[in-house]
Length: 313
Image (cartoon, one colour):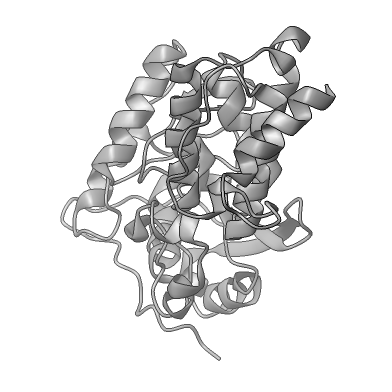
């Protein structure tokens, strides 16, 4: 092991580097490959963890573990067979790890790099700019979406998981006049679950590079106060929800008060904010809104357009 350690130190230090502590990987975005057979999985994880930390990449160790495990044919590094941890890697494996790690250095999310992600026991195919399922906010609901990429990927995932006979996938932009008519055949419904665009417009530039550079901005930007699409969804409720039906929304932590004030200014909707739930990080992120009156019919030539999106206060 001492000899192996010296060889690794020599590789990481490189000729002519005084002290050798920075290593060849920190000298460029595309570090050259070491000789095949000299590095194993554990050493590669340590190496790329150090590279990611040096570059300020979030979750450096987890990122390197997922990438190395993926190249070696496993979901997680911990699920690798123990003998693979110390087995020398092939030139092809080293090159794959370098290429995938270079994408992480560009702040591409690991889920997009790997092309798939396990969530709630399901293995989902992932590709930008479609939203990444995150455990602190997501539920087991596939929502209506207007994005073509999201619709196509939802259909593909549903087919792979043999769920096509259990879900309805409706391409829909709720802000377009008359688009509500596409939902009427499925109503009245017991509940609506939505993860709408809710980021305040002025906050878009503050999002992490993994989100800002790869996820669809139209699925994130909710307008000046993040309420534009939320208001359209609430306005549709009078035609879609059954009596005592519910809407469950994922929102920004500032929205419980804003949504509550807006609902109070719209008594004709007969909607009440009845509960707020926190995510795994303790932030108020989920709203339960319930209908308190009977479901109303919708004239064929009417559009349930919302009031102006400016929120009182």
